[in-house]
Amino acid sequence: MICLVALEMFRRRSRAATDQPTVGIQLRGAFSLNAAAHKLLLEKRPKAAEGDLFVQIFFDRVTKVVAFQSVVAESDNAYVVRKQPNSASYILTGRGFTSYYGIDTSTTRRYRLRELPHGLAGFSLLDDEIGKDTSEPLPNALANAVAADEKPTHAQTHPGGVRLALHGPARKAFETLSEAKEIAGAELRKKLKVDDQALGVALLLLSVQLKKATGHKLDRFFLRKRMIRNGQRVKVYTRTKAGEKLIREMQIV
Image (tube, rainbow, N blue to C red; front, side, top):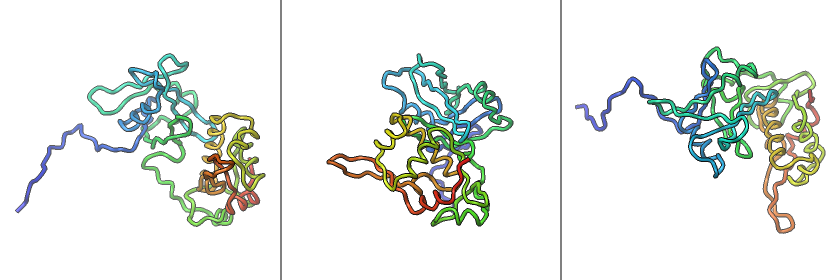
């Protein structure tokens, strides 16, 4: 005997719910956000903001990261995020953005939206596409570039070691971290002559490039941890053995 407990009709417009924030880039360049993505951005907007959600859009030409910052409606270059009729998704105009930066809109793609430092949320066009298989086999040269416990997912290598595409603050951050076995966040910020937000962005860009080049993020090479110094809890970056090996064998381009 078949027992029916919670039978429900599938409706043609039904879609599987997900708690994962996702952003889609549609054929005409518009951004579509699911309810989880909209909630994430809504939680990050300024306390003074009311009504519709407004965001500013950022793009990193080197790392191919798209980022959103929730702002008040009066902010410069703010875009409104509107709910689509009869749908749980939201739409954000992005045609000018995708056209300006040459982002492919020939087919609809979806990406995982991640929390970024300093109130930002974003995704990588290279690493966060949903349904894209990035588990490609790697050359053996990569295994010699870092002392990894697990095989990285993808990389760019050359006969002499790892190639790192670093520019500006991200390059300066890497060079500064490489010079010291251990350095406090405040000292790192002072050496780079930047504020907390700029340091966070620089380290984010560095982490993305390390991920592209080695399959591992920043903590694999420069471990971040909290320590008590002079009675205060401070953030400290410590160079690991993998970091020492990376410094010896990498090439900055």
